[in-house]
Image (cartoon, rainbow, N blue to C red):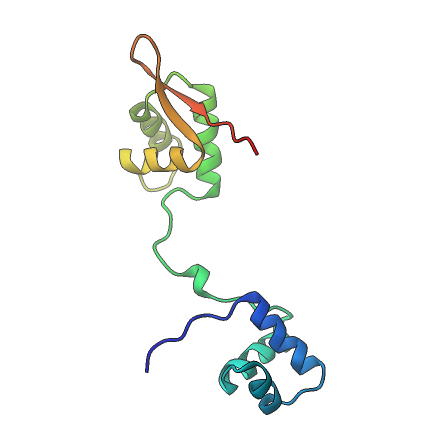
Length: 134
């Protein structure tokens, strides 16, 4: 038997709403079409913790540069906007107790933060924050 998909927050809210309105587990299963196990687990979690979140968000590889590391890297770029990605990597690796990061990780993090690497007339890379217009 294969693994089924996670329920969305809306579907979890429908289960909690139906059970809170007085429907039994069997009535909720017939009404919404979810399994008895899903209905009982979601409602039990709601009764115990007052939340119905999925745990799938915690899967996958952990990031080498967390939120505080991203803020630190952003301060480094703002202070040294003439620095190359190699220099930013060296600054980052020398500034904290975390595991050293590679050049690829540095570039990927800078891209995730919204920086693009431009070159000036002397062909020296300059990091500029992309402006988002909505």
